[in-house]
Image (cartoon, rainbow, N blue to C red; front, side):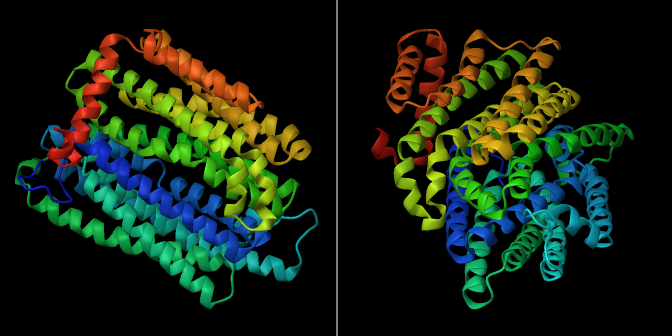
Length: 507
C-alpha cells in the first residue's frame, strides 16, 4: 500500500523509516521522561511510588487483555498485504481483537476488590488502613479504564506498524505524549495530587488518539481496492491464533522481567518510598531500552518483509550487523549516563537524591532488555514464538529467585541485579534455542552480547579504559565488523543523512 504522495499513511523503506521513526520515538520518550520528572515533583516520593506500581499494573494488564494479538497483527499484516488479502484479513480479525479486549476488561471490572488487594494491599510493611484500602479501590477502578484505552491504542499502533506506516505511528505517539503530559500537569496543578488523576489523563489521551487514528486508517484502507481480495481458506485464523497464544506469555514474562516484578516486590518489602526512587532513576536509565524500540520495530517489519521474499542471507546479515552497531552505541550511552550520575541527582527533589548512586546498575538491565530485541526478531522470523516464551519463562524464574533473596537484603541494588540476571539468562537461552533451529549467530555478535558485563565495573576509570579498548577493536580490527560490514554501515548512514538533511549540507 504505497501511495504516490507521502502522507502519514505511506509505507517507506528501511533507510527512510528508521531515521524518521527513531527521531519521533526519541522525542516521544523525552516528553515521557520530562513528564515523569514533573510527576516526581508534583506527587512526592511515596505517592510517586504508588503511582509507579499502578502504572506497572496497567501496562502489564493492557497487554494481557489482548491475549497477544498485537504481535500477531504485526507479524501477519505484511504477509496478507503481499497476497492482496489485507482488507479481508483485517475485517475478520479486528472485531475479534476488540471483543477479546472488552471481555478481559469486564472480567477485571467485576473483580475490582480482589485486583486492588493483590496489587496495592502490600504497599507498606503494615496492613493499610480502611481509608487507604478505599483509595486503592478507586485507583484500581481508574486503572481498569486506562487498561481498555491502552489496549485499543496498542492495537491501532500494531496495525500501523504492520503496514509500515511509521509516519502515522510517530504522529500518534507524539500526539499522545504531548496531550497526556499537558492534561496530567494541568489536573495535578489544579486538583488534589493523586495517582488516579494521572491515570485518568492517560486513559483519556489514549482513547482519543486510538479513535482518531483508527478511523483515519479505515478511510486510508478503503482507497486501496487492490487489497480487497477475499481469503481463500480459513487457515489464517488458526495461524494467527497460534502466534497470538504464544505472544501472550511472551508479553507477560517480558514485562515481569523488565519492570513489573522488581518494582512491585521492592514496594512490598521496602515500601513506596523505595519504589518511587527506583522508578525515578530507572526511568532515566531505561531510556537506553526505549532508544532501541524504534530500531527493532522498523528492523522487525522490514526483516519480515525480506524474509517472506526468501532473501534469507541478506536478512541475516542486515539484522546482525545492525544489532552489533546499535548495541555498542547503546553501551556508549550507558557509559555517559554512568559518568553523569552525580549531576542527575539534581533533576529530582532532595528526597530522590540518593538514587543517583544506582544509575550504573540500572543501566545494565536496560541494555540487556535492548539486546533481547535480537531474540524477539529472530523468533519472529522463524515463527518460533514458543522458543522466546521458553527463554523468557526461565528468565522470570531466575528473576523471582534472585529477587526473593536480593531485594529484601539490598533494596534498589537487589532489584537492578535481579532484573539484569533474569534478562541475561533469557537472552542467552533464547539464542541457544534458536541455534537448534539452524540459526546460529556469528562470533562477532556473541562477543557484543557479552559487552554489557562492562557495567559491572565499579571503578569509572577502569570502565572508560575498557570501553575505549572495545571501540578500538570495533574500528581497527575485523573482530566485530568485517570490511564489508563497515562499508554497509557507512553507506546506510550516508543514505539516511542525504534523505533527511538539505542536499547542500551533505554535498
